[in-house]
Image (cartoon, rainbow, N blue to C red; front, side, top):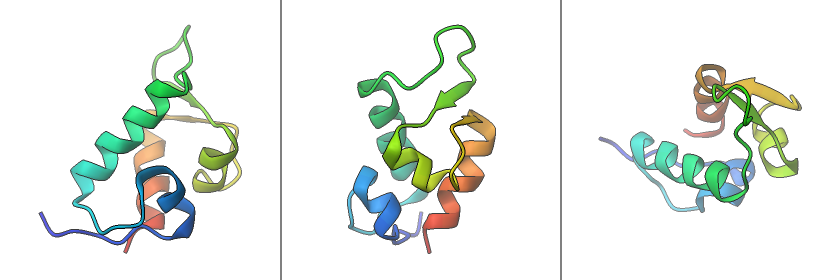
Length: 76
């Protein structure tokens, strides 16, 4: 897959180097797991910390399906 360039907001989570989309998704999930941001009662919900909130357009919580769309608005 062709690498995409994360913008400054997304780069705080996945790094600033161009990455293929699947690798961005893997790094994002690693960040979510490491910071325990997946809602324990409903696993499809991601609770945003300050870094993710910036990527999620200011939303405190998103579904994992909505997350993908919001994240790739920050990669060109």
